Amino acid sequence: MRFSVDAWDPGYGTSLGEEELVESSAPVVLDVEVPESAWAPRDPAPGTAPPGAVLFVDGVRRVEARAWIHDSVPDGEQATSALPALCASYASGVVCCCEAGAHLAVATVSRGTFTAAAHAADVRTTAGDYPVRRTRATDPVGLSLALQRALGELEVESAAAARARLGDHTTGTGHHAGTDLLVVDGPLRGRQHLPRTLGFVKTHQSAYLPPRQHAMVGTLGPGQRTPVFLMGSSWDRHSWYLRLPGGPGAPWAGVVRVECGADMSAAEAIALADQSQVTLRRFASAEFKDARAPQNLYPIAGLERALRRRMGDPQLLYRALRRAAVN
Image 1 (cartoon, rainbow, N blue to C red):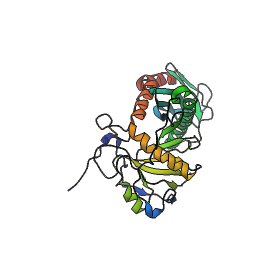
Image 2 (image 1 turned 90 degrees about the vertical axis):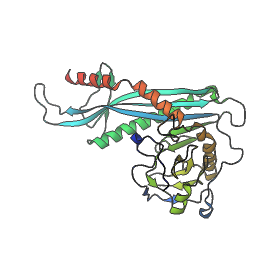
Image 3 (image 1 turned 180 degrees about the horizontal axis):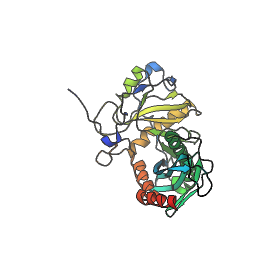
Image 4 (image 1 turned 180 degrees about the vertical axis):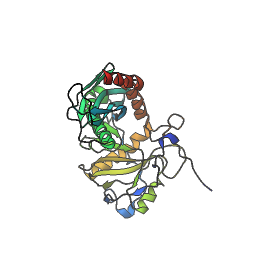
């Protein structure tokens, strides 16, 4: 019997999700780069150079407390109903990897009280304020989605700020000087308008390709990718699968899916795909350093740690919220 053990820490699940990949109903166009019959693992085009700077964007979120906003009643009377709320912290940042080295370019922490209660007000505590952020949702899933949307907006702001501050980071020599590439951890949805931007998807829940092309993904060598294809659903994007260098494992070990906007030409998407091959493999993590190697890229892992430190101690924030609730 031949078998392999997933390199990911079991606490993170698996890079392929907990279940067998579900066949996606999203329409796929396979002949963007080569005819469907010519699909085979691809190496980067000769002469492909990495950009002068790579900007890695990521965000983290944490629910500090689940709360209830009581119905508005006259002073001295007991409320008879309440609406749920989330008091949460979320942070976004950018790590710039350039000729000056890797450094934190942007880090922003925000907090909020997410609720549908019309009379809700900002929650003020000794450890920070939680401005009210009204939503239409009154269920836990809807409130969580509202928090995720706020985090996505903050990530877009961080990316724009980081690019505005690039300054001399890309003024080196060579034909790739003065260029940059933005890498967003996760799908590109809501951020596909950003120029020179890739979405970096570490885990797989759906099978987007037909059986023959899907099986070909498992034959990719380190640094190789599939041809570019166009896929749709509620939004369109170019995409390709890429295998990062790492130890031996299951057929899909070290495979990530990369996305870029559908509004660019096929030639532009193919050029970005080639550049992703010579760029992303440089930042792939090793098993002895990261429990989600090689997909959890070093700059993203470091950024997540830095942002969580900046969000503060969760126990202190929870106690501050409890005190504010009884005052």
